[in-house]
Length: 108
Image (cartoon, rainbow, N blue to C red; front, side):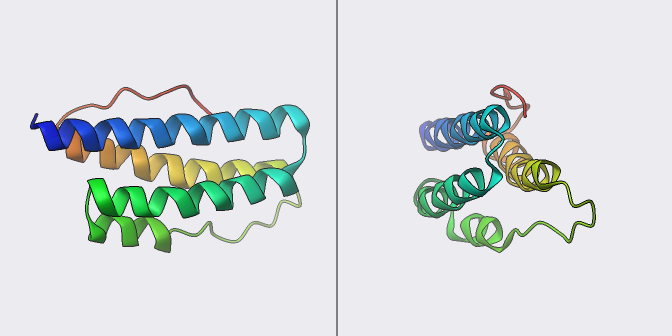
């Protein structure tokens, strides 16, 4: 793996870890409104990092990610679905950048 690839993978892994921390905190607090606000701020910080260290195309794909409609009336499940959407994209991107399996930081 090149030095740039390693740095990009480290940035992605750090963002996955931050997302997992937000998800865990929200699950413990059961405050999905605050959790969603934290995820929105996290996403706003993550997109420029992806643009800088991975590429503009990947950053735009990330920005365009939106959870689909949910009909469960379960706010925690809807929050978890959003987190899973972003986490799955970043895990796949980490594998692509690193050229192999990425170590998944925690789980949500």
